[in-house]
Image 1 (tube, one colour):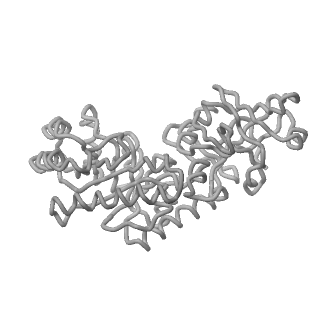
Image 2: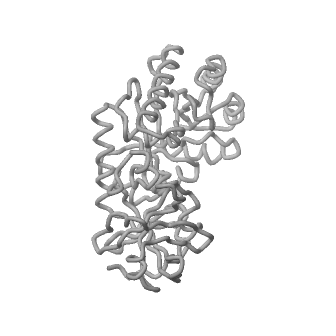
Image 3: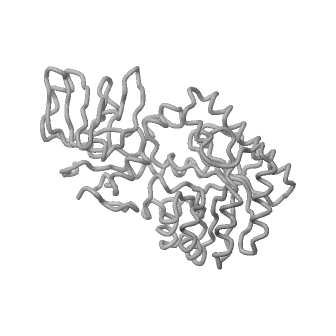
Amino acid sequence: MLKLKRPTLLVDKSKTLRNISAMAEKAGSNRVTLSPHFKTHQSREIAKWYSNAGVQSATVSSVTMARYFADDGWEDITIVFPVNPREVDDIDALASICSLTILINSVDAVNMISEKITNSIKVLIEIDTGYHRTGMWFEDKPGIGKIIDAVNSCRLLTFEGFYCHSGNTYKARSLEEIATIHTHTVDGLNFLKKYFGESGIKLSLGDTPACCTQTYFKGIDTIRPGNFVFYDLMQAQLGSCKEADIAIAMACPVVFKNSERLEIVVYGGGVHFSKENLMINGKCTFGKMIELMPDGWSESLPGCYLSSVSQEHGILRVTPEVFEKRHIGDMIGILPVHSCLTADLMGEYTTLDGHTLDHMSGAKFR
């Protein structure tokens, strides 16, 4: 058993490799390119696991993240966050060392960067088919056409195609609802490709729930899911995975017990897990308790869950049997609600054999 002192994010390498392999196989069987979103893991070491599985391109959410992976040899990178004109110098420098694709949602953005770049950059236009976060509404053909024209008027920008992140699948209440959202997205992207009549237009999408559960990818060239590498309780609740597929878990020390309330307090709060939560069996849940073992961890323990978090504290509601078996100083395992946020907050991973893996944000709790 690992000798841990503080909240530690554990990663099960075998599960992670299995998750990567399964998505790579799905992409291959559906004849689409897998360009995984690296914002989930943000680790050069884990990126190599993708490379070993045959993945050759990466999707990221910031210029900083793109540079982090470009400096490690990734040559095909797409930033799926609306371009920030204030970073145009950094974007241009990045385009000098890799094949870079950026996301543009407006003519204004094109105009603000077109006169300042000196390297060739590919452009995806973000499309909104119902999520209503960012992107051009898919029925706004005149507005989308103006962006295409603006991109084509810039010598160093190349219009690549359309991208959509259907984040509304995360609010779905059933696999049928995910299927409906996904089908609408795929059909909307194909509608635009046909309307603008360019055979070279490429289509890509990126939400994990749809990419994990659906098989309808008509006309799609690239899928960009990210969360599948680890999964989490949110993905399990959506039906994207089984709980046994979740490849990361937090190890937290027990610091207090309250016998009247059957509560166990751990060193592990909002600054470690985030404050993402789910309603599970009618209870607000910030994580599920598991048994830590030398080769991994158990299934979640019935009736034992992280019921609240403050900055450093986490409070677990547990059964009488579990309460009696746990002592101050023990390490307790907890499956996170949202693996992306938990990993970003923790800043590093520890494998089951004690190896430390990098994270772009760096270790925060040593």
